[in-house]
Image 1 (tube, rainbow, N blue to C red):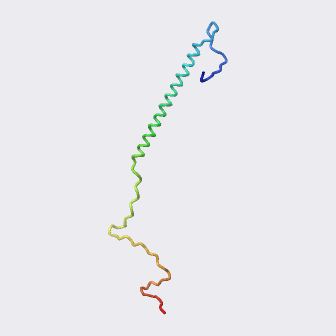
Image 2: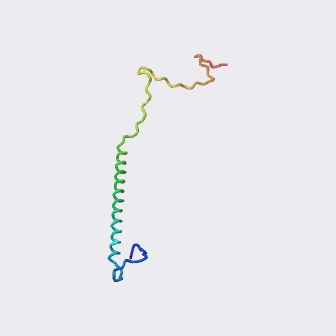
Image 3: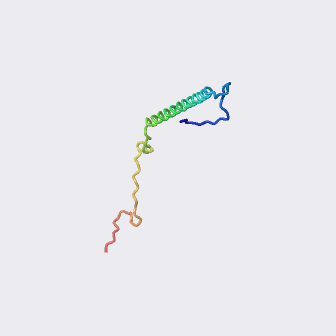
Length: 103
């Protein structure tokens, strides 16, 4: 079974008027050779792309993980860090005395 069908206006003929099958075969062989060259170029380009992708993947795997930011240091080496502020109740007096009301 033929894989491709090609329609022509005229077939090549010999001097006697018969179909020149040799000419048809040569044309077909030239087409196949050209296709083989194009396929080889395409395969080479695909191999280069695959190699580049593999190299990129390997280089990405070798990169160190993103570093966490360093904790903040005090402005001066001897400065003490400020204590955390505690929430104070607004209704509680802060004069240091016990202001409990007893009856």
